[in-house]
Length: 160
Image 1 (spheres, rainbow, N blue to C red):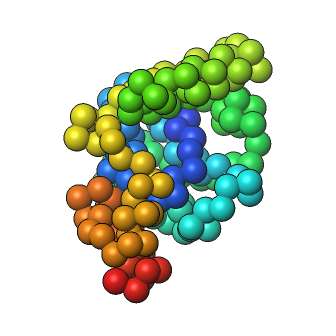
Image 2: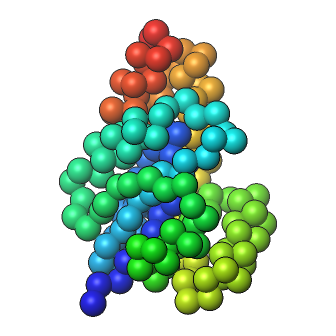
C-alpha cells in the first residue's frame, strides 16, 4: 500500500521553493498529489488550468507526482483522495502561526490525516509567489526564482 501525500496550494505561480518541497516530499512518500486550490477570493494572475500546466511542466522529471485542482476544504479533499498526510512548506517563523492554526483545524475535521511541515532549502526560504509576481510586473529578472516555463509566461504577461 502506497503512502499518499497531498501538497495543496495556490501556486500562483509555482516557484523553485515549491519544487524543492515537492522533491523533499517525494523522498518520504510514494505518491504526491499537488493540488491547486480554486480560491475565487484571491485574484490569481494565472487560471487554475494555467497553474496546473505550469506545475506539470516543472515536475515532469519526477515520478510519483500527480497534479490536479480542488475547491473543497483541504482536509475533506485529502480524505477523498485517500491521502495520509497534508504537506505544508514553512519558509520562516512568520509562516508558522498561520500554518499551525490551519494544521490544527484540519486535524479537528479529519483526525486520521496528519500535517507534515517541510522546510525548503535555505536559498529558497525567502521566496513567495507574491514577490515573484511583483518583480515580474516591474520588469525584474525572475529566472533564479522560478522554472523556465513560469519565467516565459510571466514575460509574456508583462511584455518583457
